[in-house]
Length: 144
Image 1 (cartoon, rainbow, N blue to C red):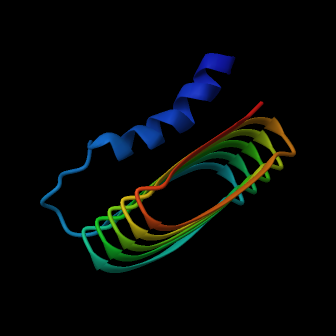
Image 2: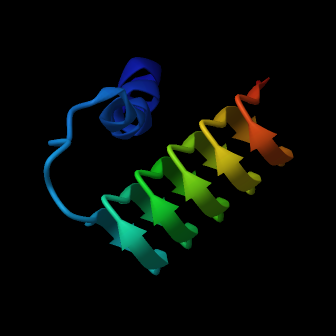
């Protein structure tokens, strides 16, 4: 697998956040897993929340909790032993996580309205954490 392929697969999941899902649908969960021993779990309460998980490799894990209205999360992980946790409450919050490599962890917490987070971690052993409260906050974390 080339570097470009490894980079594009998780980022394709993040592209869902840009409006590829229908706005008139109810809450949506999409999970794609390849490899072995990957875990994905989630919770949705509210209306029109969206979560998308793509994991390719082994022992990757994702947990997403959405409570509110029109929150969106996409997580793409390739490699092994990557972990992602996203907690969203409120409305119109946006989170995208792409992790390539091994032993990367991302923890995102959003409460309020119209907050946005993007996390990209390439390589191994990275850790990222962000907490947003209120409205209109934006955070981008890139680690290579």
